[in-house]
Length: 276
Image (cartoon, rainbow, N blue to C red; front, top):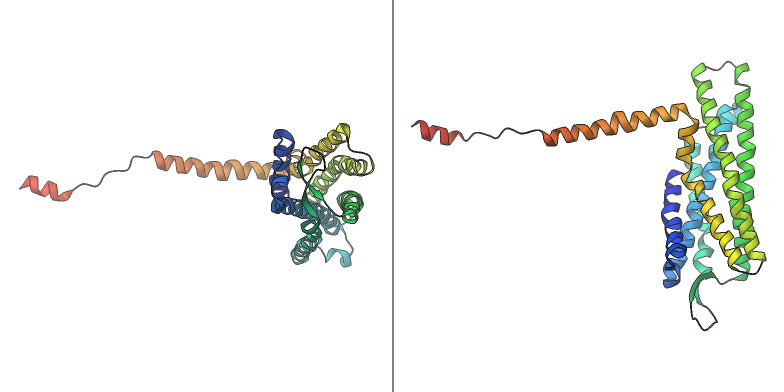
């Protein structure tokens, strides 16, 4: 999930800043980049959302006391799920390679734009991709299994569970629930803006709403680290330990070795010559 978030921010956010901040439309200058950009955006975005759904599902399975459900909470199933997710979204992105093209405007300006050239795919992109896959479906899954995990954690006090595991499950569930609540506020505006932009004539106000919704949407990919730092005491302790006790100490040791004066070897042949 972290890899998908970083890849999406590097690809989508960087080009978004260049296009709308500096007026340089990279996708319109190259048909290859036009196709690859939207293919990679949907790949990393949907992979990240799916992994977040898996995280809430995994937390539900981890806190579930029914042996049938609890046995699915293992690393082998997680690996197969991630590999299957990547393969599915790779296949899902093939139409983006086919139907995103560089087109020239019909006005006298002769400006080029990277746009969808198929009307049916455009409707799917708005209602199937933006509304369902990016909005309704992941939010329903996150809220559903996040609520079930919270219900299971509330009942941990009535189960014979070791205290350490009980506290760990509480912290993990708390982290996931806060992330889910945050996702609701950053994903819904983008879905609404996509529906409005598709059904209303384009104008400056609609364009501004779209740009603002995309900026808010990008917080989803940059927020997990800061949310976990604020919510989980154990996560903060681990971060401080890794950053300060391991990496900073290693840096100090390297610096110390570089500043140490090494003794120069003595030329014994010269000493023997002088003594003679």
